[in-house]
Image (cartoon, helix red, strand yellow):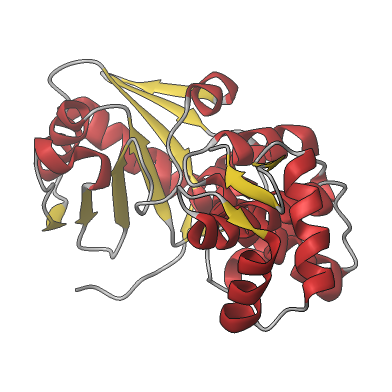
Length: 275
């Protein structure tokens, strides 16, 4: 494989122009990551060229167009049954590499209707329409990775200004949102520690992640039964080491949120999961 290099907007335009000229039908691609930051003027150059398409058919045709434009396919699409997870990696002789995703990126965030509606049209290259994801969605994608370099990109995007509510809403609307909320909240805390950039959505994200964890923990104990406080407290102490007072406090919180119900069945009071 060729060594990875940095590519400017001009380099990227040439690549999209060559691929667009080889597309046999109209296709739309959406740019994320460093490539998108280059196109919105947040980076001078990038080595990451990540694109997402709406369907496996579009990805297949785009991949074939890139092959006709002298890109080599390093990794093939996995096929229709795994379309949401499929990735194709294309690279040319100069080391320019495209990571092509279908509907979901790196088996993580879904390419949602909200993301699509926020994307900005960039340019048409023959049969290829190129769109750039919004800064908020680029930020979110970078906020759920474990790559150190993405933290600096998040800094650049945050310093330029973000609609934090959009970031929060998109994160919490995703499948497996508790996991993404925790990962993004952790990254935002790193952003504050490393660069002094504060975000108004950290508490909401971490509270959401904590609630999901509590729901899972108490759900694994209560399951589909009706159990007494003593039974719950004993299991919590054995599994997690927390005291009865902590257990009582968390139960009260989960009851207020209607995740757990409490009722008196003779004596003592019993608890059950509502979801």
